[in-house]
Length: 275
Image (tube, rainbow, N blue to C red; front, side):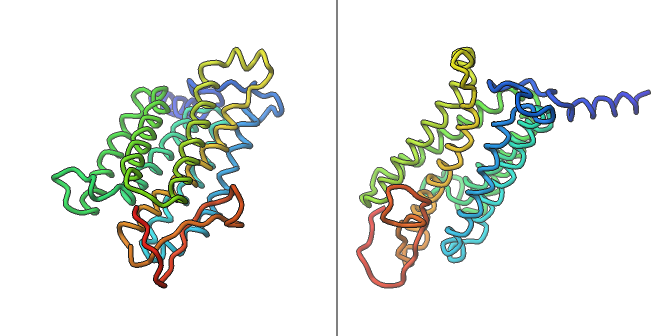
């Protein structure tokens, strides 16, 4: 009997709508197999942006560390698990979605957190990375205690990253970097506003028959990560490999007002940026 009960309990966590979370979008509106159609489809935006960023950041990663590619490789899994979660609203889908975001943040911390901001008892990045790994493992285990609080905790991590970025940007005079910082923060604020509004003001949006803010959050947050991670990588390159003379450009055209930011490295002498 114990084995049968365990099997049933295991099946329950994979079942449709076994998660306590339910976003504002109407369930099963467009398909009987997909709970939240627009939230599911918008998750595939990760699959578009991630390969582009992997390609654009490769020259920097090749010179700095190929481990940097792990950020955008894991972002692909974020998109995959997000799509699975919104397709099923299962408990397993929720945990995969949230934990994949947690591990992306962990990789970002371990790779890019400025050395000068390390705790006093940390002497090198490898020790700091082991500390981040330990904290992430503990957080992963504790996330099963109160799953509904996980998303709010992840956004708190995002606030800390914004604070760290603000500290790093105080002495920066490069106009392209400052512009990229403003765009990154603006995208993050818009994204988090959509997330909060979908969560707390659902009845208002239902009256307007516009229940797609969480899907818009997906699109905005992946662009915010693209802009923010490039800025952090640029600051990292300026500190860790200054001899490469890092600069910022936009793809597909540097003259456009918008695009995908990336780092260009040059061995020729030019004006040193103070970042």
